[in-house]
Image (cartoon, rainbow, N blue to C red):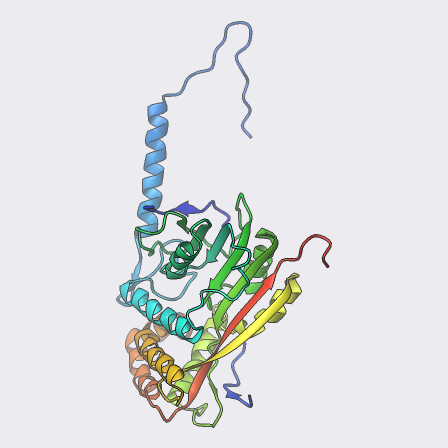
Length: 354
């Protein structure tokens, strides 16, 4: 956000868990002597603006290709995962699983009594949540940002998407009543410094920040997930690689304390267990688990290729071979693993409240 945002086209438990990972120009008006300013050719100005805009648009859509996948072009390399159609489809499945576990709630902050006028969605991905919020609050303006312009062009008239890097200083002309993040692991070097503090400064007094974040440290209540299993070792290597790349994946469990340190009040936390396959007896958890199994099978290569190649120097072929046993474990219903899903929301205090 050091640069101004670039608008896109818009029509419109005793739990066991893995251990051991580290974690000015001056203007002079005409004088009385009759001198006059040199008038510029406005046609050239407009042409220059058009060329600049076209160049920017072309550059952000010119996605680099690695490992047979495409990745974001803006701030290339700062996010390790793809942005192509298979990834968009995976994100849609993952969001559906989270919506199921949340009983189809878009938010937990108390917005119904005081509907927001301005909403900001950080790292929106494919933009599904922002679009749903635009429908839910038709009188609100919903602004959603991401490194990749992969959102649909036909959206509600009150929803706008921008390409920007939210880890940089924010520069908004107006404040927001509600700011939201979901599954932004590996997006930031520090959620507290880059997101929570900037959100606090950008919210109106009384406005809410809400984070819906997966904690990708596998838990198991009955010992059926072994730390030295293929799945256990993959999670260890995945978390280590992200930490080494300075894009940690484990901040979800610290969100409540982050909110409180930044200055939010009325902070709440809710944690759901997300099974990694259909091992659970409960019907809803079984359905969510089946969705997460497919999500993992769709995403393992995408999760691994960029990070494992960069951090461990493994070739794509070596990475894919290493994932064979991991895929078996993902679909092994005798392994009763789950991931915690944290939902934390807090309010910016009114002046004089604290």
